[in-house]
Image (cartoon, rainbow, N blue to C red; front, side):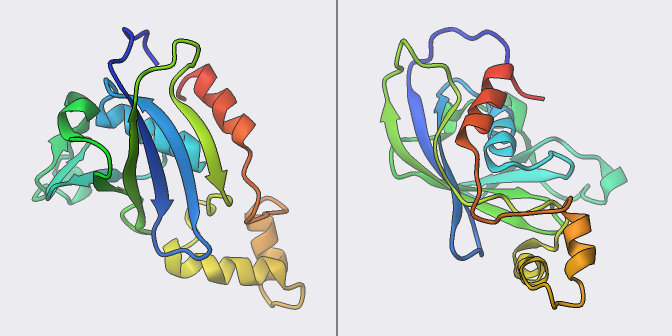
Length: 192
């Protein structure tokens, strides 16, 4: 992240992946001067996504993301440039909700709730993930409707796709495991 002036406010956001039970979520604190583009990077790191797919935010009926041309087949989609919109301009206060869609094929929809608006802690470095529940699903596993099938296959040694799915996820996958220290270490190194 570029060096930034001292933020006026800190937003505590709860980011919950829709359509998955038990829930998968992250609680992060971000600067009010971040853009939606910055928040996209925060979500990618906090959730554990690889940033290999298109995404968009929907806020009060308006779509924000990276401007797209007709090469992707989304030319008719009205989308505002996420890099030009600061969080402080779109978030009116606590309890405000908006959504983030990652991977238009798998449709990983995230609900974002502004839990708190806080003064900045002079000793803190932002962004920071303060709490997390459950592992992020592997990319390209079929979205919220395909993820349960993947879990069933890798957890049942007698499942016909067990070995193939285990190989596909890299040998092991624990849906309960999330490493808060690793998330925050990546934030401290910067994005990407």
